[in-house]
Length: 300
Length: 270
Image (cartoon, rainbow over all chains, first blue to last red; front, side, top):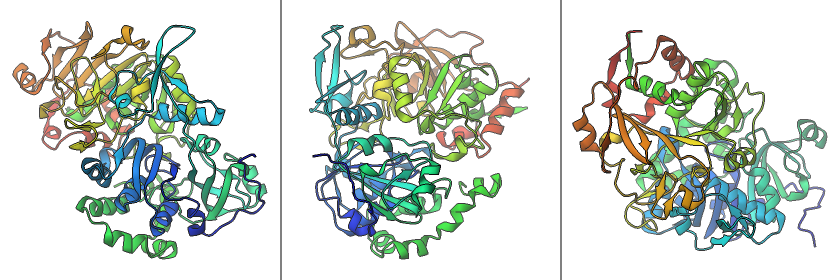
């Protein structure tokens, strides 16, 4: 039976949608670096007390670090977790890797892409062009080497990754689950195609006509639930709506760096999304479009 | 006129780009990011610049923000590659040059951006990670490697704790033996000097004017091969400096340097 999702109306409450993620699930996180991260769903997973998640993705930041800080993660399989030169290493990730609280099974953007494609294609492995001879290969006993029957070259091959759930955030979507994204899509389209289900938040639920006019990036039949969550990517950006919240990220990193995020979680996660929006005042992040000076001011 | 180390450093990186090359930088690479735009606006107008984590083709950024996936980098772009389109191009050999850095760099140009410490399963310091490097460093035409942390003594090392990205030779063999079609590192530029890779191993070719050979010897963990030549590290031109300052008005490139390094200034006669 097809795993496509055929219901006409998939609108859901945030915590009900997040509950489709079970303990121990293989979870793909959409967006990249500090852009379009599914943060409202991340906060909901923490409220639900989810444990032992296996996260996959390309380059990530506060989404992964916050889930680790809250004790929700067992395995991290991203190509990067951090805040670049600006705000530095990811403190909870770094600490949990050092103590063994998580398994930091670092991957590579291309390898993750290849494993998703194998899942999409329904094949049991695909080769990658590099990896051979690196420390990354040694961290992954599930990889293998094969000799190409056509060239005789020895290549690293990788198994499919079929996430149980892909958590995505989009600026707009309809009740059926059609989503429009602006580029860069990063891995979101591949996640949607490879996963058993997408659980999505949108800044704004709109008509099917409006999302079709903007262009459907993720089709409804891949989406199991859609939630209207204004500023649902905050503190990451979701253009054209809002830039990322650099002061909030810095405040989070200070809390995570201290090793105790209890006060942060109480203030920003356990109180729920309405209280969250009231506390973080995200409207100021929409001012990026006023002038270049306004935009630059958000990064100082 | 004077310039600062971050400005000259970026110009030195920019000059490694040849016109009509397809060039790419990863995230967390502000100096390389600024350098690519400087190259395109000066001596390499027909390069094809793929803007880091946005995969936009030849954008003119409104400004360089301190995060690599931001609309300010590509608002005016006519075309943006998809993630898979870019990495496919890099794997099949359609990307000519990538800028690559590392927390550790060995003499063969292999880099570690994964973890510091003897046991990678319990790393003393978990670094951010390598992005796409452990595949595309094997296949991209050539690499410009850089670091702004040479002086620490912990960056240019004899042995990596973890090998993330492929240089000219790994413990398992050289590129031919591994079956890797890319050319490997062409340049290593540090805040102390410039290296090339004769026979696959780093060789010091030039020093910044305020650096001595003894400074480099003290800071370098791998065997130091030296063959200094004149003319490799010429000061920035007025035009290059103007572009650096215009492209990066927030000074994001300076985030790569420690406070003492940023005090270094140099006269530019041009």
